[in-house]
Structures are given as structure tokens and as C-alpha cells.
Length: 504
Image 1 (tube, rainbow, N blue to C red):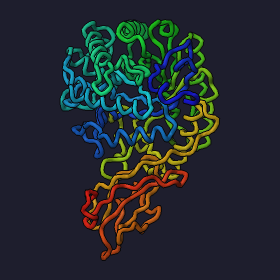
Image 2 (cartoon, rainbow, N blue to C red; image 1 turned 180 degrees about the horizontal axis):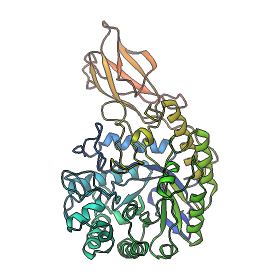
Image 3 (spheres, rainbow, N blue to C red; image 1 turned 90 degrees about the vertical axis):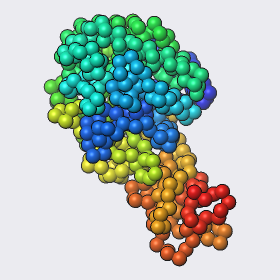
Image 4 (spheres, rainbow, N blue to C red; image 1 turned 60 degrees about the vertical axis):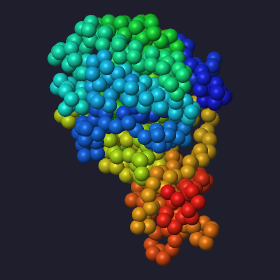
């Protein structure tokens, strides 16, 4: 955030000032990403070869740090992660069974929060997942969302109505909320509710999207749970996306609820004809700006908390750029988050392309990460070639810095050192450096480092192989940022490295 020191940003709470946000008494606008997997990777997707149903796991320190370093390079200040708070009904989840909370899941979340604070980022957490219309879940149905688990635990197959009206289910939801907000992070010494790293918390992702519940019922539920939230948490913001989160307008009654601070929306132009019966295409964001004006007129904050960046939503980079400029130019939009940022993988390369996390396999608008997963320096997928993805990432970067108050994007950040993970038969595998489009490999020969491969290795290739069968096997790798500035080299690795503590 321009004009605010790192310490002020880290320690200041984001506050609502009418229809705007502030931090340390200064206006605050943000841009960032959705990084869904920070609390639990592979949670909730429909089965695919990349993410089978039994593959939920806690992301590694490297994956978390890489995502955060990438977000900082992209100019992000606020990240939303649904799995920071909303993982329910699986053995690794925060709430595996009704009223039982998992210390291992909290430990993962604690680590993420501490790392975000260290990286100079703020977070938006979440309490509940989509109403996705799936059958009632069980332990063999991990694609179900937390909304459905609450109903299953209370033996209510009529989840559409029951989730919003059954006092027992509302109590279960509030118990989960309380457990999250009052949890004390041993790494920071702060309860989550007292930690300025959290901007706020989303009630639940599109909870009424497929239920067909009458709007007044959802409004009553929203009043109940937002009042309860602020009875526990007076410093952070309550974010609604359960009502009006698609292309529809949030109701005037909901806008009068005193304890709802932020009204959020999703914006995917290619979904609009399906969700709303409209025909807006390729970034025609009139309805989004109309909604922002409606919310601002009520004295509340509006945030497009998810928006698409890919070719299905914006056929050209120019269309995406125009959309982003529109967000920047609208004073009624306090911040935004694109969907969705991925990171480098443990060992080498990129994280797998995610499965469809948006709806069940029969849902007519479903698509997987081939369309929406963003790998910052570019990766070829079914929807994008690497160059197109990389160019769109730079548009998102310019937008983030504009939202933060910078007149122009600054130079690209220095990249960290890669880490060689293995050297096998002269093939070097390494964990990538955030922001590096390519890498140089050096060999240790007669006590000096010689460049044997300049700008020749990438995250997309299966490592790099030395074709000189007679040369010593001791290597190091260094990356370059997008301005061509070299970062620090990796630690040396290979069978012929001197045995001085550097051998891996």
C-alpha cells in the first residue's frame, strides 16, 4: 500500500469507513488473488486424475512461501482462502465431525497466518462452503461442501431450508465460527479475531445459489449470524456472499443489516447467461458496477471477491485490461480478488492443474483449472498458451499496484534462490523461484563455477540434464526475475560436490 510502512500495514486493522475501507486512517483499496488451497489442498474437488478424492493434504512450507512471494511480486495485498476456516467433514479438515476440531488443521492454519504476516499480506477467511446440490455426503463423498455436512450431521435431507432455519444447524455453524475466531495462534500469540492479518471473514460461498430458499429466509439467517459474529469479533469485517453473490442485486433489506460490513460478488462473464438469464459477454461489467453503486448508496463496502481472468471470460488481453481499468476507475469498488493463483510444486515444476471445484460433474457450467488456474510466469493449459497466461498475469500485476495507489508498477521483485531437490543420472531437479521465468545452471569445476546452461532451464521442463558424461557432478541453479536480474544461487548439489557441509 503506497505511503504506508511495512509495520503499519502489518499491525493495522482494515476498517470500514462507510462505503470505503481504511487502514491506519488512510484510504485502503486492494487487489489480490484467491488461493483456495492454503489451509488444505485438494479439499472438495470433484475427482480427477490430478486430484483423486482421497488426496486432501496440508500444503508444504515451500508451497505457502512460494504462493505468498508470487502474490507480493504481483502487487497483491489481500488474499482470500476458503480453506482458512472452511474445511469440514474429512479426516484432515478443521471440523472432521460435528463439534470436533482438529489440532493438526489448526496448526496448518496457524502457520499460514504467521507466514502471511511475515510476507506483508492480509487474509480473508471463510466459514462455510457452497450449496452445491450434491447428494448428502459421507466419508466416501469428499466433494461435498460444509453446507451439506451440517445438514447431514443433523439428519436433514431438506438442506435448502434446514441450513437457514433449523436452530440446531445455525448453532452448529455458530459453534464453528466461535472455534475459529477464538483460536489462539501460538506462533503469533494472537487469537484470530485479534490478529490484524485477517481483514475479515466470508459467511459462506454462495450458500443460497442452488437451494431455492426464499430471500427473506436468507436475510433472517444473515442477520442472525452477522450479529453473532460481531458479538465475538469487533475488529474484523463480516463479508456476505451468501446472498446476491452472483449477478443478482443484493436486497435492500440485506443492505440494512447493521453487522454486515462488506457485500461481495463473483464475476464470470461466461456464466452470466446461465446464472442470471442475461447475455453479457466478454467483460461487459455494467451489472457489476450497478451493484457496486447500490451497495455504496447503502453506506456499505462492495468487493468483487472472485473474478475470472481467462479466455472464457475475456477473449483477448485487451478486454481483460479494459475490465481491470473499469474496476480501478470505480470509487464504489473497494477491492477485488481474481480466481485463482497456483504455486510451484514440491520437488520441481508447478502444482498440478486443479480439478473442477465449482460444481458437481453434471453441472453445465463446470470447468477445471485448465481455464482458471493462473501460474504467474506462464504455463500452457487447455485454455491458454504460456505466453498468453504470462501476459495476462502482467495485466493483473499492473492492476494490483494501481489499486494500491502506485502511479505505475515498480520493478519486478528479486527472486529467491531455487532449491535443488535431486541430482540423478546428471538430471537436476529443482524447486522453482517465485517470479522466475527461467534459470541458469552452473557446474563446479576446479573450485570455480562455470555457466554451462544460461537461461535454458524452466519450470515446465522435466528438469535439466547435463550431456557431458565426463564432467564433475556438482551443480547450482539460479533464477532471474522478469527484468532479467539474477537472484541468489541454490545450494550446491551432486555426488562430486566437496564434502564441506554443502553436499545434499
